[in-house]
Image (cartoon, rainbow, N blue to C red; front, side):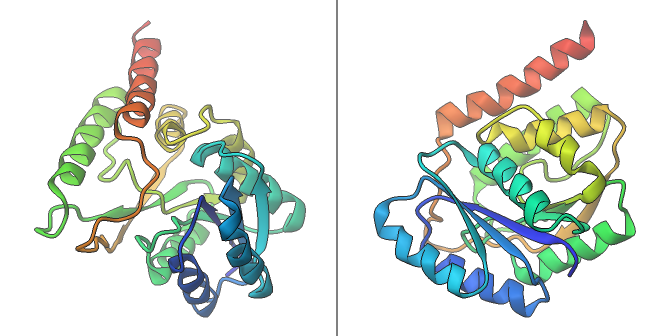
Length: 232
């Protein structure tokens, strides 16, 4: 694939190694892993990922998912200036390599749009809090922007090369960045191409660095700020 995969991560487990292998088998030749201030015990894993062909960029301290994505975009522009864009993929096995490929292919057909992988969150195996949280965000997003987006919380996205600078300029350093990106794009008239993907939820609780209170406040504070700016 002519897109570069960016994987933001902090304190990853062995699933990131499996994910990288699956992405390479799916045809992604260039993968950038952004270490967002992981502990020392993880450094051997990053060295292994480099041996597997990944470019690994390190933050000396935890800066947040948004900051890690921006670092990955900067690294992509330096290392692969002719890339068609960046596919962001979460590190914990929630995104399948074939779904990343599906999103990348859709982006190739829509080079002026942001392409997102949309999960079906109505299944019985999807945690109630995930269904409720996404339904609330989708409703608020539509009221605020006038655009219907079935999965505003998805981290599987493709930013085409013409919009990399735009994505890099979006405010937010932590989890609020991804919502800000979609909200700003919708209000600026940038199309959101929505591609159905598999919703992967393990029976055991998924490792997450999301802070339910602090990060939710950041996300919804941004939504409210965008809404108030529109009303004014």
